[in-house]
Structure formats: structure tokens, C-alpha cells
Image 1 (cartoon, rainbow, N blue to C red):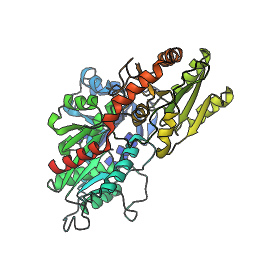
Image 2 (cartoon, rainbow, N blue to C red):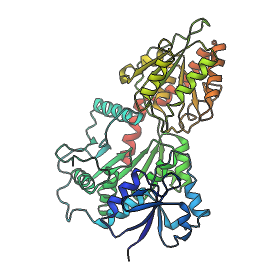
Image 3 (cartoon, one colour):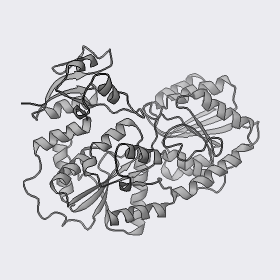
Image 4 (tube, helix red, strand yellow):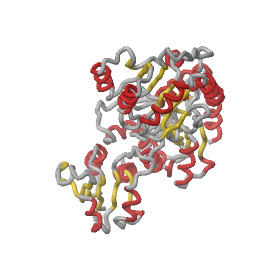
Amino acid sequence: MRQAVYLYGSGKRCVILLDILKNTSINVVGIIDSNLEKQGTTIGNYSILSPATLFNATNAYICVTFFSPLDKDPIWDDLLVKYGVEETRIISFHQMMIWAYMEMSIMPKAVSNHGLKTVCRYFFDASWKMELGGVEAWLADLREEFGHRMYNKIGWLEYKKDQDTGSDGLFEVEKIKTGISRIIDLMPCTIVFSRVDEMMLSAFLLRKSYPDSVKIIMAVHGACDGMYRDVLSYRECIDHYVCVSSVIKNELIRYGIDENKISLMTIPICYKGRTEIAYTLESTSPLRLGYAGRLEIFHKRADLLIALIEEMEQRRLNYELSIAGEGAMYSAIDKYIDNHWLRKKVKLLGRIDRDKIADFWHEQDIALNLSDSEGRPLSNLEAMAAGCVPVVTCTSGTVEDVVDEVNGFVVSRGDVGAVADRIIFLNNNRELLPIMGQRAKTDILPKINMERHLDLWINLFQTI
């Protein structure tokens, strides 16, 4: 009898599963979405149903397909308490993906002569599209620094051009087969993953078949419900976790991960900036504010930059705001600046090269972060290392380093008025800029040491 499953969430991941599951014995009996506007519309042959359907779903599994940016998404408790679904029947997107591929049995019949093509035994996964972001910058820095050390046992796992399927279809069979083939060429090996993607799934499947030939380390950079659910779907085959904040570590422990299998790291920075910021102490000069990061609403809340500008304009603050970054909100911010004649006060700089980011922060007094979710924001570390005073929203990553009213300010997420309050306080008490800025710098510099970070990985590789 085919196993019945409802897919909860009708977004991109739902569509991916519909395509994958049609090649298995798993029977999708319905698609559910809490969005009233989506209920009654269709995906393929399925009409999207109300969550009330689950009251009668006594034998089916419920697969939560969506990636939630919330600290803890209420749907998991709602399924248990409100709809009476047994915990054993609630599974994640990646658990369902694992089920599907385990049933497909796509592993090669025999694996021989593996590992003869490389002297490397430890790999950092870089098979995904490298874009602008803290994880990408971290990997790029590690690659350069390990190269300087000439540590030839460490390599970088990338898709070979002649193995790439040339398709954008996420988690499709050919991509998983390609990942399996690529890793087989490297076995026995240890792989460090920063994304839960096709290569991670490929490594998991190989680990199940060849447990002595593949070890998996998960570097957990994100601190939201979606990230935890994705990572924990693979817990059976993850040998060690490296977390960028103590909040993430404690959350994994709460989910039942052995504390001895978790290490902490701070993203290192090769700090080569000038020694001191020339803080803007004269009240007649504009206070210099800086923002550096992806200009996206999801997680980053770059839309709040417009609200903050409006707030500062209404309060007649004497300021200059420099915004470095790219993303979907770029054009909206640019249009707002143009429509409100703010070109002289708000500088939209686009993407800044990594080797110039220290100069960017040395030109600011205050560093802004308005995110709803941060694992450990690299831009905040870089700004504090330069001596900027951070004014940030309260996320697991920012509170790891920013102590409210000591080396910066921490406000509630989404509270643009509170951000403006702290900026105005610093504007009216500019003598605090060098005091708090130097505290920020003093606190952060010991944490971002590259040599200590490289030693962490080498020791971990040798002991895992």
C-alpha cells in the first residue's frame, strides 16, 4: 500500500517534492496552505486545501515543506496540539526528500578505486552558487588562508563543469547522481557543509551506504526555525556541528544533539584597516551611518532602511547614510532617495569589494543592522573591528557580540523608532562615539583571529 502524505505549504519546496515523489511509492493525497488567498487554487492536479483537512488525516504523514524565517514556527506545535497529529507523522521537507531518494536506490552497484585521484582528505563544500554574503566571504577567506599555509590535505568541493547537469531543477535525480559521483571520487573524505542542498543529500546517501568512507561536519550559520529543521533532518549522519553563536549551539542541544558533538566558532577577519576612526564629534557635521549587507526583505529587512530614513528626516537629524550592498530592494531604495531629493544625504554604493570594506567602515561612526534573523553577521564583526558603534536589532547573532549600552545598542526587531532613538542619543552625546566604538573594537578583535580559527578546523579534522 502506498504511503499517504499531505504537503503543508504550497510554495517552491512543495513543487520540488511533487516532481520528486512521482517517481516513488509515496502518495501525495493533498496540498494544504494556511493562506486563505491560496486555498481553492491549484498546483498541477491538486486543489489547495484548508488546514482543517488535517482533522480527518488520521493515517497520513504531514510534511511541512516551507522554510520558516521565524525563531520558532508555530505550525509544528499547531499540528500536534490543534490538529492532533502524532509527532511521528510530522516530517520536514528534507526528511521527505531523504525518504524518496532512499527508495529510489540510485547508488552505484559497486564503488572501487575511490580516493585515488586526490591527496586531499578534508573538503569544504563550495558546490553551490557563490554570491554576496557572509558564508561566501568566510569560505573565500579560508581558501586563501589555507593556501598560504600550504596545507595540502584540505580541498574545495565543487561541481566539475563536465559533470554539471546544466539544469536549474533543485534536488532533481541527475543532480543527486552527479553529487554522488563527485564525492565517490574523493572518498574516504570529510566534508564541511554550510548549506543543506543537493551535495549534502548526496553525502548523506553515500554515508548510509559507506559509513567508513564519508564523514560530515555541518557549519551552522543560520538561526531560524527553517535552518534548524533542515540541519536536523540529517542528524543521523552528521558527525559534528560547528555553530557561529552560542544561541545556535544551545538550540541544537535543546533538540537533542550531544553537546560533545558541537563546537563554536567566530568568523575570522583578516583585519588590515587603519587603527582609528576619526569620529564625527562636531555637532555641526553630519553623523555618519553605515549599512553593509544584502538588500533583501527576507531575514535582512532592508525595507526598513526606507522607514528609518523617513524617521530620521521627520526628526530633522543631521546625518549621512552610506548603504553598501545589492539585492531586490536596491531599486526601491534608489527610487525613494531620488523622489525625496536625498542624494546628498543617502549614498547607495552597490556592492563593495572585500578588500575595501575596512575603508568603508572606517568612514562611519555607527553601523546599522536591522535584520529579523542573523546567525552571526559578518558585517557587524567587520564594523566593530573598525571601531564603529553598532546599533542593531536583537538577533541570536548580534547579541553574541553587542552588549546593550556598553559597546553598542540592541533594540527589538522591526522597531525603527527605537533605532532612530539610539542614533539621536549618540548624535546628542557624540563624546560617547569613541568610548563605545573602542569598546566594540576591543571586545571583537580577540574573537576574529584567523590563526586560531584555522587551528580549530585542523584540530577538528584530526580528531573527528
